[in-house]
Amino acid sequence: MRIEYAILADHADIAGGKLYLMGGGWDTYSAPQAPFQMRIAVALGVRVGWEETNQPVPVRVYIEDDDGNEIVRVDGTLNVGRPPHLPPGTAQLAQMAVNLPTNIPAFGGYRVRITAGDSAGADEVAIPFRMLKRP
Image (cartoon, rainbow, N blue to C red; front, side):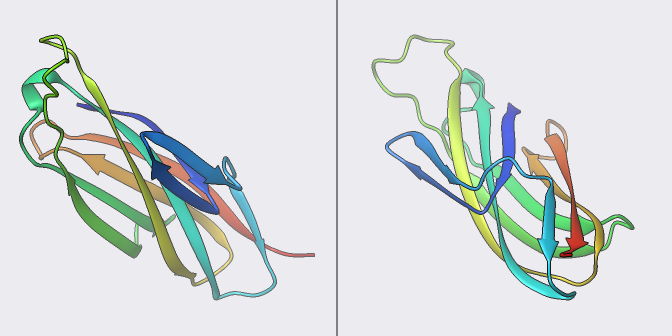
């Protein structure tokens, strides 16, 4: 499996196999003060291989500061089946939307880390972002 895409947004939903974003694609957030309570949405797509279907795939989404201190974490599992019409050997896209109410403690740099899979075959991506003081 591999993480095919990951994007930050203000809000994200998956409905009918489609991704819906509001305020997507940012890497800088302006806040009037710190700490600041905000919602960070993470939309991601995991490409699951034929041989990886019908078994649980652990997924972890967490936010950390530039020093590696964890701010918030969500652990989940996805499980992709094999529809009867799917040609053998076909990989499938499993999409997830995680909306995280988050207290960002200070202005500065952060990153959202996403891992999919177990330790032996896990894929990981990191999306950096900054919180700046609103002028």
